[in-house]
Length: 332
Ligand SMILES: Nc1nc2c(ncn2[C@@H]2O[C@H](COP(=O)(O)OP(=O)(O)OP(=O)(O)O)[C@@H](O)[C@H]2O)c(=O)[nH]1
Ligand SMILES: C[S@@+](CC[C@H](N)C(=O)[O-])C[C@H]1O[C@@H](n2cnc3c(N)ncnc32)[C@H](O)[C@@H]1O
Ligand code: SF4
Ligand code: SF4
Image 1 (cartoon, helix red, strand yellow):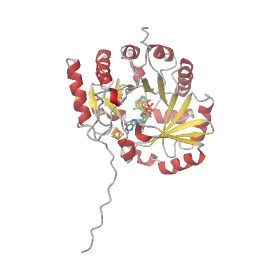
Image 2 (cartoon, helix red, strand yellow):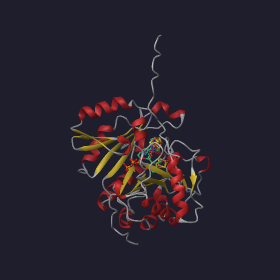
Image 3 (cartoon, protein in one colour):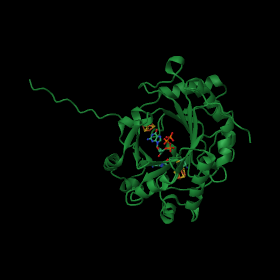
Image 4 (cartoon, protein in one colour):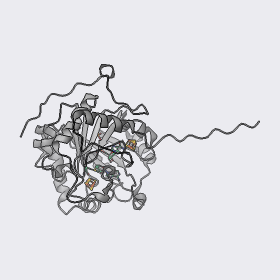
């Protein structure tokens, strides 16, 4: 296995870089979120598939070659982009994922989001190839519930838990456990999830995620996020706010709990700093919009990638915006 240059990119101070990318709404772009495949070994009931139009997703998969992925990242780095998140489909479905990691230029952070099923045996190799940390999706600690949500065969939950252990052992930390909250299904498991992460002594963070109801059939699972935030805040000894999406982190009896609340949240969109790349090689300015993609798959030169990157950033627009209450007309 080729060992990636362990050198980490320095923070790019805005004054030092003439080329920081800003969209027309003044939002800086500092990260890329790259889908490396549309294929997946699970079929979660809620999957948004990173906003891809999956009428054309299939078992064969639409995938960029490692050279294209690394070529895109190399150009992005020139604009001060210093974080890359890999997603899917299921990124570990790609046998050449380590090859992708190994050809990346130095970055501040390289992470991946995975369902964890295939992680146990690959965690060390992923770390050696340059992956810094992982997010692992885990919606329930009850096997039957986990299987009902994800469509996974029995025995899968144990595999994911072994994947978490291997990731911690390999130093892919902090590991984040992604729990999509589903009313009446797993919303009674938040306390047990917190207990579960406490055993990892700060190396594992719990990320609670508000369900995005991409399909009306999902609406019945939407939880009351405001209520949940209130109760997290009441229990927390400390609350931090991240730059990305202005997400809140609650420290509760030693457990770190991050809350991802994208729905109707204009503050979340106002602090959105990642540009997406679809599995078939298109810049995607927003998760929820599909009519403004910029095809980079046939780019012939670094200069062309650079131009397409700038074009994609110029098309970025916050999806949720603050609602303006119209001023009352004065009576004359
Ligand atoms: N609407 C919206 N949802 C997002 C966005 N980025 C992440 N999410 C949601 O956040 C959840 C967690 O995403 P992850 O892939 O684990 O990554 P992350 O938490 O965003 O990134 P890190 O904190 O860097 O690990 C997923 O359910 C995503 O759909 C975004 O830009 N817009
Ligand atoms: C699309 S998956 C891709 C990566 C990988 N297959 C996994 O499941 O971790 C990325 C993240 O999005 C989350 N996700 C998918 N659909 C969602 C939805 N409708 N609402 C909120 N989060 C969702 C998943 O739980 C997962 O944590
Ligand atoms: S594992 Fe990830 S990509 Fe696969 S169906 Fe579940 S959420 Fe979607
Ligand atoms: S603009 Fe909002 S909805 Fe679109 S990707 Fe950014 S945070 Fe997500």
